[in-house]
Length: 155
Image 1: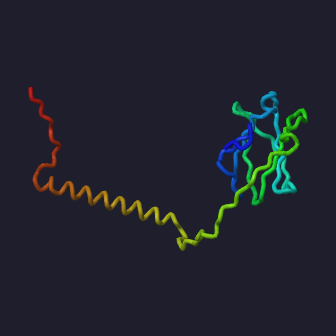
Image 2: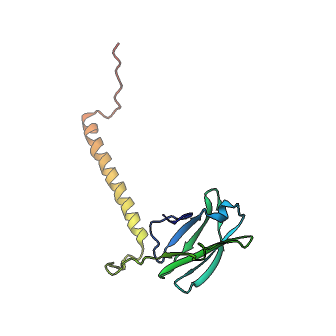
Image 3: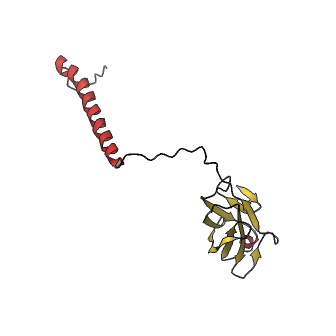
């Protein structure tokens, strides 16, 4: 998703408590900067302020960020020469969506060891295969037709 020119996300919408991959191809990338750092925070007061180095790729500078439960995700970028890309002084500000979880039903499962279910499934599969082979081979044994048929070639 591209919300602003040269800023791309790997998702259609930014959702609280999720991870998003950010790709940046703006002026700092176009000017061949060697290192770009993202300076980001959440909400109007830039809470949980963090600065991290982005990875340089052929597709731009990239980083994965864990989004917090906040109203907005704010960031700006700077390179090793202390040149900033802050969206002309307005910073990059994106709304974070909060999915409605009121209709979710969360149940705890009483299964203490889920791997037992897997073993029982494998055993039942083996039993079914054995029964299938017996059903197929009994008529052949009774009729005496249990040898492999040879192909006839008519000339």
